[in-house]
Length: 420
Figure 1 (cartoon, rainbow, N blue to C red):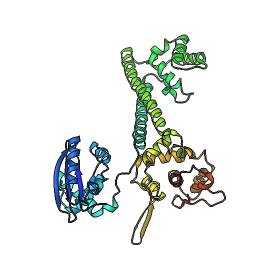
Figure 2 (figure 1 turned 90 degrees about the horizontal axis):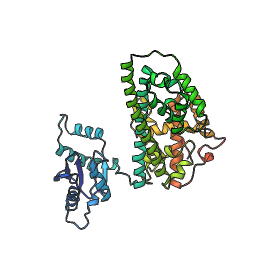
Figure 3 (figure 1 turned 45 degrees about the horizontal axis):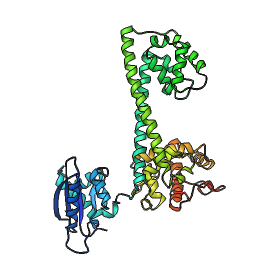
Figure 4 (figure 1 turned 90 degrees about the vertical axis):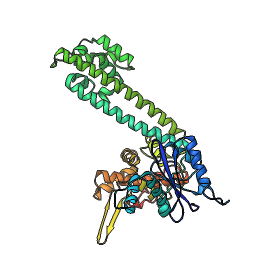
């Protein structure tokens, strides 16, 4: 609870402006601190000296800031100082309320942030008390997703280049999962990045390359298949141009190899960290939720039991709860666009994978489609239903129960009406 003072920090890369306001909204302290241990100590001392009353504690002074990822925020969390992260778009709307002119200053923004908590503090929750293990899972899960995006970018770039110079490198692996992205396919491409170089590879050389790449079955059969593919007549570019494009292929292949290795490493680290978490068993008990998907869910939801008091709050945070807009005689229900986009994207995948692993999920999805929902809204509704079950299981410590989540013989309702 606030003890009569509220603080705001306008952060920057060098110096951070600090302003403290009292109950009347008047600025009582201003300071500029660096994002260093000495700057953190100075800020905590400033908050401690706001009042000489023995009842005053710096932890009674909530702090508003527009970022939750800076080292200064990390230091404040370690000191158990209450921190509220104000979204920059919301801060911009508060700024427009104070003055119609586009006036902005670092000192003014610090005071404005402090006054946001003074006026509407009940509408802004402090940073959740997520454990260090859960926060590490958040970092790893997001890094793994970004590594996967990078891998797909380099794979698409290489595919586009091979279509222009070496289409046989694509068709030769079309019958196998992952195609030219496979480890053995990339090893063969490194040995023959152009049609002329690939055509010079005999079956013995190809078999050796496949063996070194880790293939254990039907190596000679695959080598003969590749030799036949590379021997097919093709339209060749002039040799200097083909050689130059071959160098470009090798460069793209090198970046793809690195991206694949990074993605595999991060996937393993993410899954290992997730398995160590006490709540991992609950997530894994849900249909369609494996270690990687569970890590993404846990990383975004966190493990603070007080963060989401109700399942509806969790669904709203995840973008699975509908948004109602009503004004006079006009009323509409639309999808929620302001949400945790990482969790929202994960939920779509989770709902899709659960369709083949849970009869209740499949029946619920089919019911929503028959009721008129299209593909994405039906999955979003199913995702909201699963989140309701997940919230209940996290609160009670129980594993997923299909009969509780989707009672047999009971009419399936909307996500907002989930009984679990």
